[in-house]
Every structure is written in C-alpha cells, then in structure tokens.
Length: 231
Ligand SMILES: *Cc1c(COP(=O)(O)O)cnc(C)c1O
Image 1 (cartoon, rainbow, N blue to C red):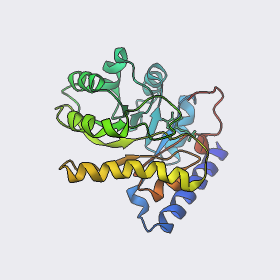
Image 2 (image 1 turned 30 degrees about the vertical axis):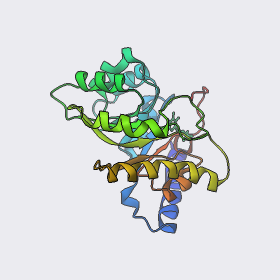
Image 3 (image 1 turned 135 degrees about the vertical axis):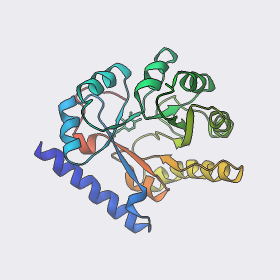
C-alpha cells in the first residue's frame, strides 16, 4: 500500500501546483477517489491515508463495497451511466449522483430518496464537444434540465459534470471544461446558483482546475491502472 500513499501525495502536489498557478484556494477543490474495479481493502487503505470521498460507476459493485466498509464515514459518489431500474439503489445508498442526464431519472431519484436521509446531491451530466461517452445532455438542453431538477423536493442540484474525451492539448481540454463553467454562470444569471463543477480526471486535472473545477474525479493516478477496461 506504499505506492497508494505515494500516488496520493503526487496527486495532491499536482492539485496544489495547479491551484496556485491560477490563484485558487486548494480547499475549494474536493478530491473524489474513483475506486471502480478496485477492492474494498484498497478503499480502506485510501481512507486511512485521509481520503473521504469515493466514486463508483457500477451499482452492484458499489453496494457490495459499501457493505464491507460500513464502519467508515465515507461520502459515496455515483459517476456511471444510470439505468432506470437502478435508481432506487442509487437514491437509497449514495450521497451524490453526478450523472443525471434525463428528467425521468431525476424524478425517480427524488421520489425514491428515503425521508430519513438529506436530499440527494446531484449534478447534471453535459456532453461537451468531443465527449467520449454518449451520456449527457447537450449544453443547450442542460439549462432546461437543471431548472427541472432544481424543483424536485428530494434532490439538491449542485452543478454540472462532464467527461471529455481523454488526451489532447491542455488548451483544448480547458476549452471543453470552460463550456461547463459558462453554463454555471448562465444559470446563476437565471437565478439558480450552483456550487459544483465535477470536472477533471487523472490526465486532465490541471486543465479542469484552471477552468474552475470544484470536484476532481481521479482513479488511476491514485489507485494505479484498472485491471479491466472499464469506462
Ligand atoms: C473511471 C472514471 C474516472 C476516473 O478516471 P481516471 O482516468 O482513472 O482518473 C472519472 N470519472 C468517471 C465518470 C469515470 O468513469
């Protein structure tokens, strides 16, 4: 587990350098460790190293790990594609869902969020130009969906999320991220203040921070390469 601590230190150093170079306080940026395909023991080690936020992409895999780790005060984030028959499990078990891309899904999550828990934190996933996955609404549709989500009683709309295509020049990565920052400003002008941009992964966290990311989703730079090729 030595390398996990080294990796985490390396990621923190990158975040601090990127924040400093654009004059942003590091405390405005939450690091979510994306632990999909890694075992519960790895998450336990990362928790011991100081991480509290973990993100998963597959519902059943996540539920199994939550069970194994229920003695730890973890904030759980769901970042994967959402099937409508999985919304109840998401609404019951997670603290955040980053990948809301249809009103139907938002309605189900709100209806199924247990009364005993605070409203579910959600982001609307936006398909910025060049996005590798097909998930996410277009920037044009994003503001409409955001207004609809904001009205749902058991959801708390926090912001936008995007997964741009990996690679490319930093300037190109940043231009894609800036599209989301622009959407956030537009919504603020329309009277809907949001506090979250879920942007940036292992390869592009510097560009994301420069564009205003408040939540980084970092997997391989912390845990090492994933054994299976999961998206
Ligand atoms: C896997 C995944 C990540 C982490 O990607 P890395 O390149 O390993 O940092 C971030 N966000 C989402 C939505 C993912 O599926």
